[in-house]
Amino acid sequence: MTKRRHKVKKPVIGAVAAGALLTAFLAKDIISPRVESGYKDIGSIFARGVMTAAIEESPLAFAVEGNDTTGFYYSILRRFADHHGLRLKLKVVRNMDEAQAELRLGGCDIIATGIASTMAARGEMHLSEPLHTSHAVLVYNKARGLSLTSPYDLGGMQVTLPVGSPYAARLKNLGKEIMDTIGVDVVSDKNSTQLLHDIANDTTLTTVCDDKLAEMAAGSCKDIAWFAIGFEQNVSFGTDKGAEALNDSIDDWLRRFKESEEYAELCRTYINKGSRE
Image 1 (cartoon, rainbow, N blue to C red):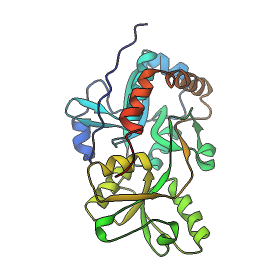
Image 2 (image 1 turned 120 degrees about the vertical axis):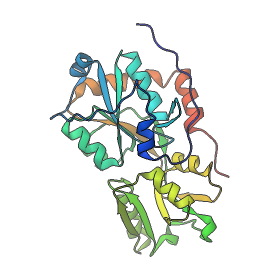
Image 3 (image 1 turned 180 degrees about the vertical axis):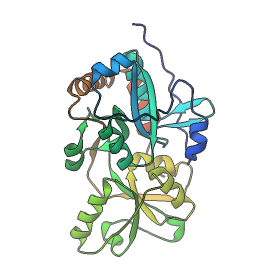
Image 4 (image 1 turned 90 degrees about the horizontal axis):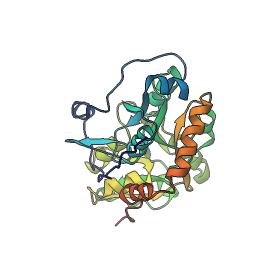
């Protein structure tokens, strides 16, 4: 099988409205409205010739600007699909709850939102060979006059998270560690990228996200600041535990792909972009 050569495109920085995104979507990657019952393993995926992924709109995961489609997770998925001669369909989800519902009901084959490896996540799904590592970071706008450098600074504060965020549990534990209350506001209509946009525009106080996503946001807003609130964690794709052949296929391919120059170039573009200002 002849493999396509992929050109790595620079990430699109900034929040894009979901409606505009779907309007601009490339014809080769389409949104599938169909929801079936039960998971789909590799045999049925090959039979259909289509792999469906639930993915968030973010510069790290997936974004469209004009005719350019970018994103670290999207780029890896695209290469996996091409390697196996599959067409890639994307379902844009707003949060992890939506993604897990799609996977549970058979509406997608894989969650490509970038899932931190936690005990809770491993209990819900199979986590793939790690794509990269990250830290959970507390993000705020320093133009507000805030100077947050330690978990102890969070006592009595409110932190806004997307529904289904794995960082809610971390904040709960952090409150116990500092023996103070950290309030959590959960929103269902925004993802982490949109909350970062709100922080840049001073309409949201704080949030918690992946440090790679925070670095990208800081590239377009000099007032974005953050500090780590957790240990380094692996970040993976998620699939149904019952889809054993699919899980093995993805993991085996990822192990090989991570040794390639293509993967190294993607990491240079999206993951190893340098430290914050």
